Amino acid sequence: MIDLRALTSDDWAAWRDIRLRALADAPHAFGSSLEEWENASEERWRARLELPGSHNLVAYVDGEPVGMATGAPFDGTYELISMWVAPEMRGRGVGDALVEAILRWAREQGARELRLDVKEHNLSAIALYVRHGFIDVGPSRELGERTMMTRV
Image (tube, rainbow, N blue to C red; front, side, top):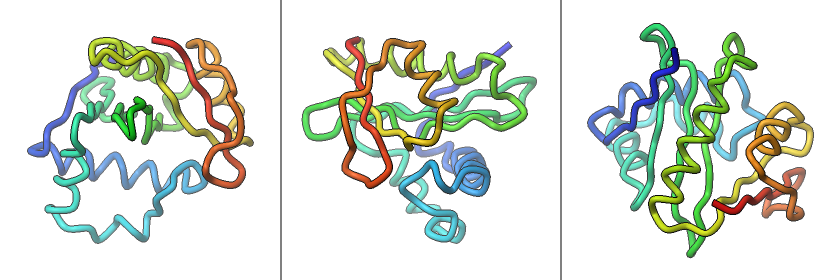
């Protein structure tokens, strides 16, 4: 059973632990690096969870954190960011649960669409997003990434 928990800034240590694990496992998938975050202060971790209007989730299976995702408003659009699932849990529904929860959240916020950026070579992630109705809408701001969008 997958348990999704919404985090507040008081959960900064749990976010730190899973985020550092994600950055170590998949450095190519994020705009940030492990080096940028591994010695970050509690204040910086709390600030990340306090992005205005954001919805930060951690997925747990058997009490262990196994995935994360954030929904956040940026410049009038809603985006899915910081998506990651532990390698041993991929293909077991964790990513689907996280994406569906962020889609629900975006609908509740009144969003008309949800966007995300994904590395072009991350075919597993692209397949996950396509399953949830995302379509490729062109190159992103970053070299080697595509922007995907779905209506909510």
